[in-house]
Length: 207
Ligand code: DGI
Ligand code: FE
Ligand code: FE
Image (cartoon, rainbow, N blue to C red; front, side):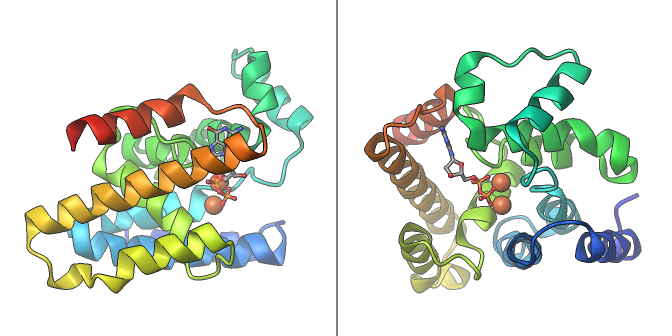
């Protein structure tokens, strides 16, 4: 059951879990951002968004070897491309571990929001989009692209927008975020996941 009581218990677990202070602060700030985005776009999904936010980076600080071990234990043999895109592995392993470690939160929408929070994919649900964005623009992010995206999102006062304008605003901010990610990966000559490209293409095509 996901409700105020279980979410508060989950937050306490995250607050005392083994992770760096930076990751803990980020995780709690993503919950805050998810609440704000939920109020704007999906008030009925606020609890789901909070659960996904608190759980999205539970495996972020594992090594590549540990990620590969978890994938294999779940019958998944990662491809070379997946291993080289090492920063994307934690979204897959977190989604796999939620049903085992946090079964009360393992609903399909929580698990899929965690699964796709790093790359996005084609056909993202609203919940997936909101967690992806909350992760990008939480208030602890100092990286210039994140600061720019946070500004882009909030400076236009989305609260005052009517629905169609607000939806277009979300789409435009998501397009900018994927462009930033792809540009940064190109610059560093790191492999771009096909899911990232599919997510961007779909948003552009629908425009
Ligand atoms: O886990 P966080 O740091 O909070 O954020 P995240 O899960 O969005 O991860 C961001 C990192 O993932 C960042 O270093 C860029 C990387 N990333 C995102 N999409 C791709 C990617 N890396 C590769 N190689 N390919 C991608 O498509
Ligand atoms: Fe992450
Ligand atoms: Fe994150």
